Length: 459
Figure 1 (cartoon, rainbow, N blue to C red):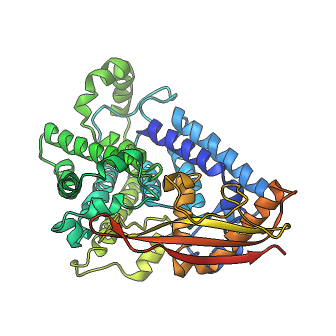
Figure 2: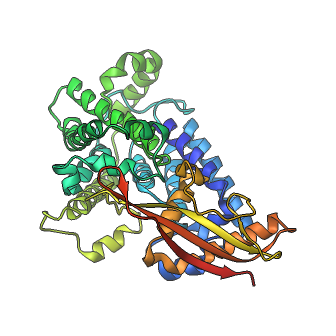
């Protein structure tokens, strides 16, 4: 699991680096001053907000990449797990408009990994201090995390689309912004979509229970994990959701029963385990060590209760919720979580963007597709309009009215980018249109609504 998480961190950092200027500098879509004014908590931290210059972000990305590599190979694993968690949290705090559910899962998974001995195997350290069977209080927190994702997501799916009509997947696949080719294929079969809707709902509700029950057989637990993996693969094959599915699958590796690995672990690590365990038998923990373990365990129990109450508090039927002051302190570690994926109902507003620039020849041009004429026709496929899922998520947030303060910065970023790349065809004015298309039952849509979300000039 450590190696898998490390590879995902490296891939995620690479994807972010392709848009490092746009997402993480003051020349991009969210200057630090705007972030601090509208989307900041006094308890947040971010190394990436120390400076809005590009060189500073590049330095941090390079250091981050080196730390991830050391995590992958297993060098001082606990230390570099903490450092990688701090870097990831810092990145996510710097630009919340490109963060999705998979990012929350990855961040909290890294947090729990700080307390787990995932550096004791497949690492460059010389000795292992743990046998193949391992359990601690931190295990409980880790096990609850991947199980919480879909279980609480199912509890939050209260609309008839999920519970009675069975139309949820129809509406999800009606979103052209995220529908992939295989999703387009099964979208043609309404009866299949209805059946899959109920299958997805009950897997989300029941598979976590099969995984987390303490006294069930390994076969039942494996069946629950396989259902989970199948769900992630289904999401990956039909919907464009970035790294969410790969993060989810990797997070399950640590849940597999150790008996599956006993033979391999015994052959590979037999001598190391025997030597270290015999040494530990002659070592009596000191009072200071025992006190540290005591405090750590109480801290972990507190975090488990915090995460559990955060999730229970998101369910309307649950009568209790965490005090706002406690939630504020939780923001220091960024433990906030809400797994309301496609809940309580599916978003039905979809659409595409049109970027109309006015050039020096007094012509309106399409700066997105480098065309001399602006077209408002629906592109095919819409999902290919986004450079990455980070941009898709940003542009999704861009359309929300409560984020209208950020619109001019994206608009001006696009003008500067275009003029720098096209000095012979500069634009002085840019209007960003959103062509809103709302899904209706029976493969119908409302008439497309043309919305001018932002206009700005080059000054």
